[in-house]
Length: 405
Image (cartoon, rainbow, N blue to C red; front, top):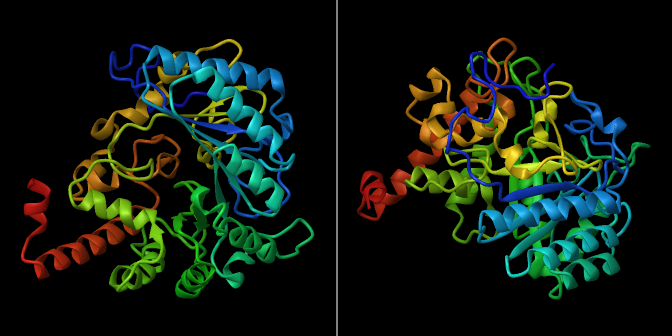
């Protein structure tokens, strides 16, 4: 399969849409390519692309130096107002806090006055007091992955020998809630598990006192659907799961926890445009750098097929401008022009934005399809729009008036 996957009929090459590409602003650096957990839904280790097997286990200093140079070069050339770097894995803390801190310090030194927002996304198992203190002192944010309460988390997030990861991860959450660290705690990523009770999972997170949650849909495509989903049968199991939580969260007298998927969709429903890559029509301007220095598309593309995320470019030989001109990157910046005819005919297309790009893949038609979660997204957005509209009506205004404002 080609490393770069344009749509069928799409012309390839840098001249695809002259002048339309935007500079890259978000960089996901794979600090480590191995992990100490064995989450059986993980798109890196258990889905279509198994390229992690040939990756170096660690991003070596020469790769770090090249990546830092490329990011600084790109940021200065495009006069970026700021740069976001997320340190991922595998598990980025397998070697402790040292590697993430060295990367961030090198970046800040090379970027000079250009602000850098840096964070590490960890499974939490290795997040000790000493590691947290070093990360916070280096002004690096911390996000933790946890799938809700014990029962939900232990369905899939276990050690290789089958042991539960729950106690170790919740200890990390408690650590990051300490006064000296909480300013750098970004919250929890929680993958939706249909087998789990949604309210039990939600209440478990609330009891831990997490400041923010983002519920993630498991990765899948039309060829390899997500668990419990039969595309085209019009059931909406993932929307039903999420809306059970949304209704309680929306009706709560005090929202103790920010929920990104709900807040983003409400923002878009109200007429906003800013969102993260799962929704909306704003350009997506991020790139992944693997431990060997190769550039990749967003790493959830590994759910599509072997090599689907690859670009054939790397930090030693290619600039980030070259990456941003690839058809697969341009396609993420076209807004409405990237959507399938079915999506364009949908009343929610401005909000949905076609859903997460990998979830649109279908053999024969590539990525110009509705999301495999189309029915779920339609139901989720429709219900959130209805609740927002009712709330505005009780305050004597209308959704149309807010959107026009």
